[in-house]
Length: 512
Image (cartoon, rainbow, N blue to C red; front, side, top):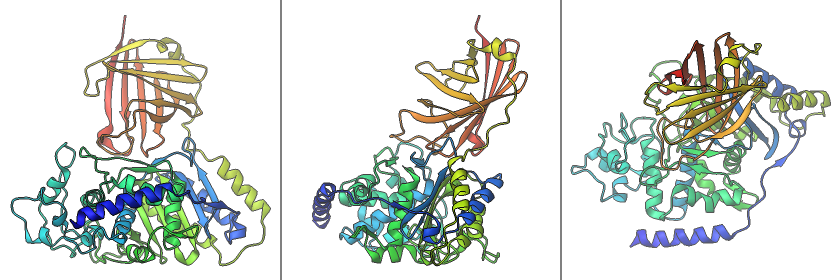
């Protein structure tokens, strides 16, 4: 009966919130007006671009609640959605905090009480002891995670998985706990996590572009799967910096902000060895409720490949970053080394020269383009030719290259579909394709987009070898096609530099 009453109250609250007028967004200012050195910001950008294993896609810096710098590396754009990976967890934490504030459940409620129909035949003492609090602090007691790629009942599979340790005694970084939290929110409110947050958070804050993957049971994946713009990421950080207040309205209880961003778990995550020097490691500073603590009395929402929302209370600043980096700790190191010292305690004198240099730099950001080489005579021989592709597990039956005027249109045909992707020579060309690539995660969920935004660039590496680079610009992974032509044959090596399992080889022969 309590659950039914809670569900009615939550649905009623959703209707009220949805009818309210959205509140203003973020205002803009200049760096020096808000006590930030334009020279320091420029040094940060230049330092990032020198690191070969750090690839930023976009960033936004807020100071005193105002946007003072933003930029994106073409072909990425600040207005595009971007996959967040585990930054998603901090949005899930926010939904749990709102549910608790509405009286839907408590931190110390046992997990098994929410899923009476999905429990294993034998409930271990550790499973029986697991609470909402344990899921939030990454201490559910698991030492591994079940395989959830199938279409079975995810909740049932997680609850049947062995709970190796007493909950609360480890820090096992995982995705199953956040998924259970998403399932709990949906169970007690009757709404998916995305819908629940839309009424209470997204609409009031002007976050309108959300896209959140869900599993076969249509439960949002609480540990990953959310895509929003870098500005929306910055807004969440600013909400937490302002202790849940947004333009005069308390959207999130200040008590929750304090709890979620304080150290709740002092154990080291499973990839760090006890006894090692972790003083300079931001992954060793403690864990809150689906938020990481940092050095410099700051905290962050943190996702794979360098997605960050960094909140710096002492500096009254928020930094949101999207990226495709393989060294996220180095990314954080550069923020502390270059960006943090640029944040001063009071307004700075106007510096037009430095500001102009910064604005010029930010307006021309671009991912490195392959070195341009003159066109190959091979282009005339292969353009418009259809290559029959040998049987393969990708279902690709034919490819065609249409090359002219420094542009290449690449066509891939399967039994039922025809996919087109555009590539420019020394410039990015955009297109939409239905061909799934390394877009977000390693396996599809039910609500993947029907079309993917992509941008491509190509060059002739050698006389008979063409290289094409393709970015799925709402994701993090690029894809590289190395096309080797020899007489009437073509070999296409498709490489994903961030996930080798996405790499494969196609072989084809000209159709007569």
